[in-house]
Length: 139
Image (cartoon, rainbow, N blue to C red):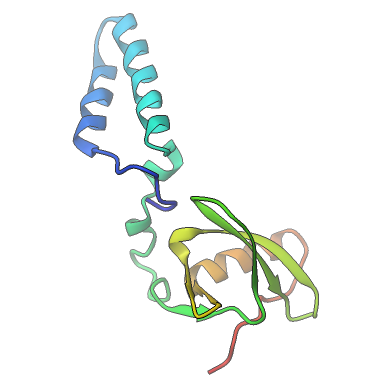
């Protein structure tokens, strides 16, 4: 899953629940929909995470598995699913950006992000009018 759920989802069980949505009985369809939502919530997941699993986000992206050290970065907030990272931009300013845990690595006090997610975050900054890049450590 793109953001790790607290408990592993049993895909077979979820598929069985979703197959009940094909029932001709409206009551069964409604019960199946509510059951699927309840199942995801009890497993700390969401439809977004089920539809876009982490293992799939790397498919077709040659840079996805390459992790790059973020220069002078700092974790401001930790949740089970994501980290709020203070990153430095090339214009000297800093920006607070949420990163899914599956796209980060932390080792020896340093923070590494996948090249693919950095490109996505920079694209979003550009769309918001910040025409800068996130600083990374050059090897």
